[in-house]
Length: 223
Image (cartoon, rainbow, N blue to C red; front, side, top):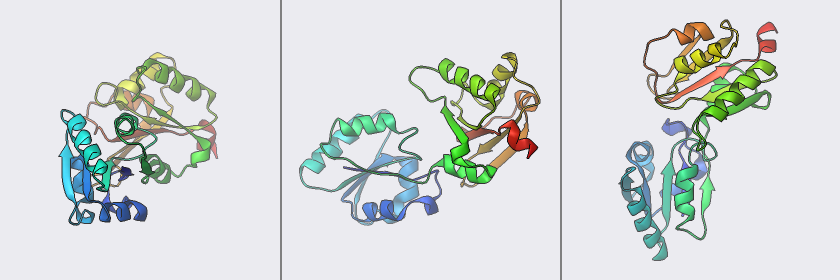
């Protein structure tokens, strides 16, 4: 099996290697929203959408097809190293050999939009098996240190930007600390909001589940 990450959702962000894998595939599986992004490169391949309810069944089917000599591609969103670990675990359980083809990461896109360097940044995700508390504690600690830019992936929909900023203020982080929220990066309707922790905490608008928060380090604000 080959796993192809399609990037943040813009078809133009698909890598050439990922496109080549799709064009050579006999079977392409993935969630429907992902398959819609890559449809034009699937050619004559059998396309099998899956949902959270039937993903085990679809992956079993894909594994059986691989056993019959067919070339199978599993498509997923974004960055293989950030949010695809559960899907990858399911694929690894069914295939002896798995090739991973990463896509462009939304984290890279966020860095480009914010004009910050990845090597000067720290990435934290709230999409964690051990819950949000350890990640929020890390976020508070690194914000206090102020040595790096912080890129945070919120957790839809119970820990979105306003709630996160409310928690930070309750933990005695400066309410005037700057923050930027990017939504739907590279997609139609992409938006960016910038302000302070307090201003973000007061927001009542509904944020997209495709949101990324960037907390620039204080030193960068003074340069």
